Image (cartoon, rainbow, N blue to C red; front, side):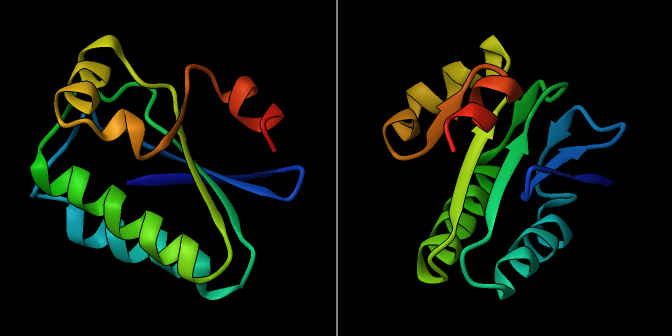
Length: 111
């Protein structure tokens, strides 16, 4: 479900063969993402490339991960957002809450 790679001591996670982040998969994804922050100071990028839709439970996972990251002195950033999904971030005013990047390269450079 998730594909994980390390680039320059930054953990990059993306969805594997999934184009919708909804209530059917949010709980296991949330637990997987939270586990990265068991180590203080973790830097995590969630690459949403290929995701066409996110429901409210998916956005709830993002908020939960952001809180977990902050509490463990880590950093959580999101990249690869499609135009459709960016509209949802804007509609929910979450583009002001998260650090969002268009591409993975831009996101990596931000660290």
